[in-house]
Length: 374
Image (tube, rainbow, N blue to C red; front, top):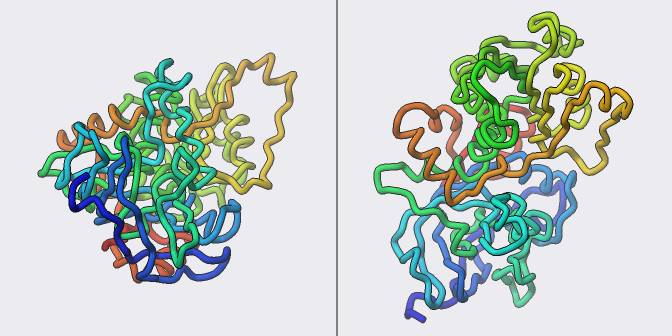
């Protein structure tokens, strides 16, 4: 093990209790990487609704915890025998590093890899976290824990990118873009000429819009109560803007514009009731994709007899059904070809010390994505 691969004491934004401000501490210890792991110095990390759900208590999690899972940085150290990555490599981090060997990975279902359990356990695959404070474990939030200066991750959780891609822009690939574009291209498999409804226009919803545009959708309806977000969605490819505060029956409106309903509906706001709107707005044989992460208390009501007759398909979607090792380079290629807008998703940049202000912005639906910088 190289001299650099020793434990470090790092600064991190720590959540110690739900519905309380995060605190910046400088005494979290992160261990050296083990076999199959790398340690990455975090440079930039987006604030995602999933982080907010743990902050506000919608999703219970072990505490204290370092959240943050949409990040980019520079490899600091590698575990013994690592050959794919080296210190100094510029990388995007992903919340679901594919192991390549489990039941799902060998069936090309990498977003269902056993490692996805880290999103719920907030630990590494072996049950450890790699983080301690005053000798006690600190949880590693949502598969990454990037609101700290350094993270430990399985080596497949860090995807190398070229020097000409800005790290502060590339970070949004880690969650929002992977999830939204992947939901459109992989989960729903939108084909040219299809019609689409996207409900919720945060970073993920906006990325669904871009994915639908890339796939050649003929009509892309978007619904969000924030006027600024609707107008931004137009720049990303939306063709029809819906204000749900004025058009209460979004499903009927969409059906009137398509005659039979849309081919694909996406719930991207994390509101269970919107899945039911998507079911109503989708044509017979259509697909409803649940991309958002509603509170655990949310439920969706289905009428089984209608589902049988109408043959609609309701499916979940984690990380855009992506194999990050393939999709992040592919999406970078689309970005470099000016076919995928990453910069447009970032509406604010803040230092990590302003993480609580960033959480307030997200709660109030101000902007699309805030990137926090170390």
